[in-house]
Image 1: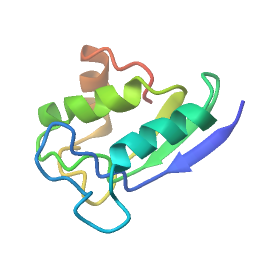
Image 2 (image 1 turned 90 degrees about the vertical axis):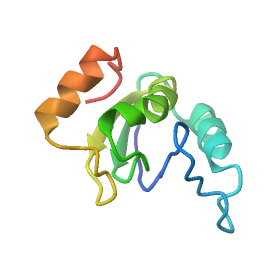
Image 3 (image 1 turned 180 degrees about the vertical axis):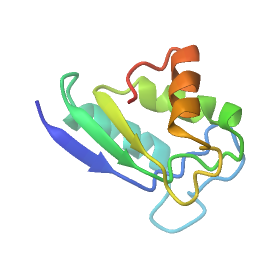
Image 4 (image 1 turned 60 degrees about the vertical axis):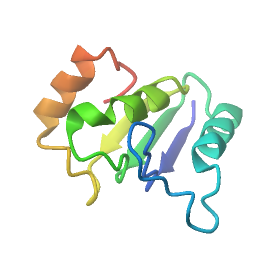
Length: 105
């Protein structure tokens, strides 16, 4: 069992605000996916330390959270300064549960 941390994913799978217009961010979602799959095992924990999704409303983050949920490991979430959609921990927990995203805590 290992512990990993990542931040500033700025996912935009369901939105039209891609980061790959910036140098070094080309195909970043695919690179996150491929590197995560190569390193993180099902029993590992990944701390996702904020700036998870560019969405403005919680419901619009579903494609981004689904993308992360399908990756191995348990995920511990922290709110970032760009996570405008995150109101309270309780609302996040309820929303994650309602959407079957049980790999997040």
